[in-house]
Amino acid sequence: MFKKKQNIKIALDWGSYSLKIVKLESINNRHIIRNFLFVNIASSKDVLSLIKDSLFKLEVGSLPISMSASGHNVICRYINFPLMNEEEFKEAIKFEAPKYIPFSFNDVYFDSIILKKDTSAKKMLVLIAAAKKDYIDQRIDVIKKVGFNVSLIDIDSLAISNCFNFNFSKDASLKNKAVVLLNIGSSITNLNILEDRIAVLSRDIKIAGDDFTKRISSDLGCDFETAEGIKTQPDEEQIQKIRPSLEAVASLLAQEIRISLDYYESQSVSTVDKLYLTGGSSILINLKEILSRYLDMEVEIWDPLVGFEVSESINQQEIYSKSRYLAVSLGLALR
Image (cartoon, rainbow, N blue to C red; front, side, top):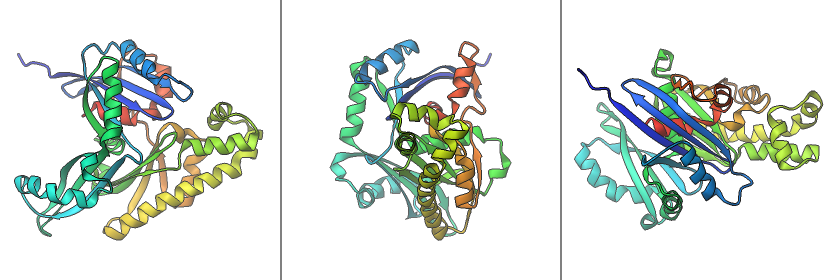
């Protein structure tokens, strides 16, 4: 008899607004979400206790935790290197990496990988990722304090790419195409450009959901919490009052996206065909249409749950209503 390959992962996406935690069981080619939690931490003064309680609710036991990082403490660089083998690359990267990392090299953790090789041009595309040690150590320390261990630290943008490639693994239309992924969170928007499913540009944009919420709060004279609720389900009167502000913030976001697209297209023979939109703030009223108009590009809402099985023990309405928040945690759990 053949033994089933079984693996259970716990993935924690620790954002500025919420915790998204997924318990994923992989059995051969099946990936089953056994449990998940979405926990609002925006107004909490004791995040440590919330993380501890959440992990115990998920019955994590002794399983280690996968986590990710993003923002100004993290950097991703995509560099063309001369073609070389793995051993040569391991030696070369020790000397080359510091040139591309805008922090003191002694103050960061870094890793690198060869993404693709072009033998005819005698070059290869390399990813260098780095994160500040104090930022990573602080988060690991929190997990240890609540009684768990960390097995993996990833970058949000790379986890998002991993989730997307799983969701669209059977979509032949993506072959040899360049697309942009946009994950709009509370304080940061993660942008990734994939070329034939391989990430070739990653960037964190500091225009995100909170910027929309602040403008709504100002327009309607309400507090931030109330504006957060209105953001996704405004009535007709509210839509008329907030539309100019939503357009203004969306136009700024579109400008930042366009800068990245122009840079990519200036360096590549490919052009980006489509934008895939996800993240908690992607449900903002009319955002898909606004971005499509500003960028003159097809925009599709992307559901990170595609291709996953969801355990019957999970509240189906809850997980599907929160699905757009889960790209990072699901991408982490697939590692």
